[in-house]
Length: 191
Image 1 (cartoon, rainbow, N blue to C red):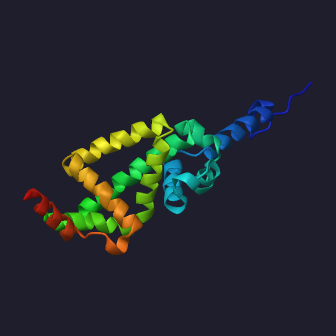
Image 2 (cartoon, rainbow, N blue to C red):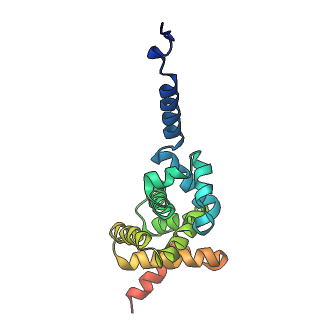
Image 3 (cartoon, rainbow, N blue to C red):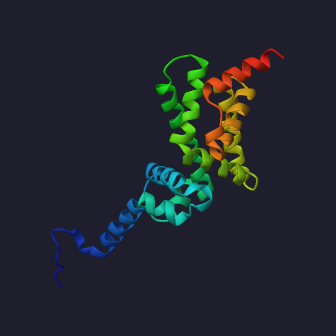
């Protein structure tokens, strides 16, 4: 009995190679961490934390649903990581955009971000609500708060930032400016 050999597939093992090609194709469709993080960031901005689904993220990243579990374990873990990265990116952007070391200008640059990056600030508030029921989300947010306290110079500036953010998100027409913040802080110092 004579065996024929396919030149493109030695030893006639086409089924095995077909399976291997299919397997590697499946792996490439699972995507990578960067695609998922980019898709999750996009969803946080466009849909917010509460309205983002696994399907939304997978679609935005161009990957299968399974890729989320494979790379991050859960949707919440992925969204938390995406939020942390987005906030870090915003912090770096604000540091580059701050015109001087004048306190009024630094606070004003931060305040301006409540408008220019409103969806990201809202997503952070939604994450805080999720942290009530998710120890994993709470752990990541707590780490972010510790970094925020360090970066801003303590717990009072972080509390001030949080309060300003809420004022700007709820009533931007009557929220304070950077100059107002510094003026009011100086008044408090004189008490």
